[in-house]
Image 1: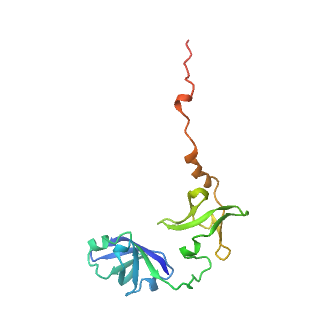
Image 2: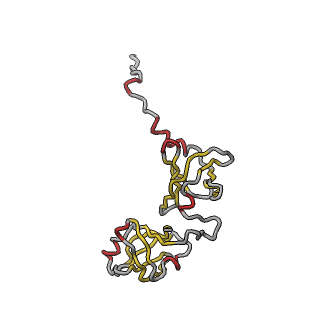
Length: 192
């Protein structure tokens, strides 16, 4: 099974190194020299890690066959995935692979009200989001933070959320029509 382990960022220097936004707890294993990683989009890979090093808190990769800044720029934005065993799960009970969350019911805290189903996990530079599909196919993006996602029980098939007021109502704004200017009464100024 493939799991996302990182995203290639901007080039570093002129010799083909790239920065990597790490999405794994085992970067030394996943990005070890010789590791083969698949890419999304697939046309950019697979890539083989030639070397990896840390610089100012950021992982830098040298990719086999990429020797200049132009080649490194061509990899920018690629999502990197590694092969893991199907039975392999994160050791920390607070961590989950994306595939473990997909399909789980999203339930409001303190109730059994099903809000929707987790369709995907969206990884952004600032934070991750749960893409939740509601009845009727509408998508709601829920910040994947402890204050909002209060519990995850993979075995029970649910994610418990404590949503801020108004988050679910945002999808109803499309249904509200703006008042028609022609239907408002014309106000005439009073004559003095």
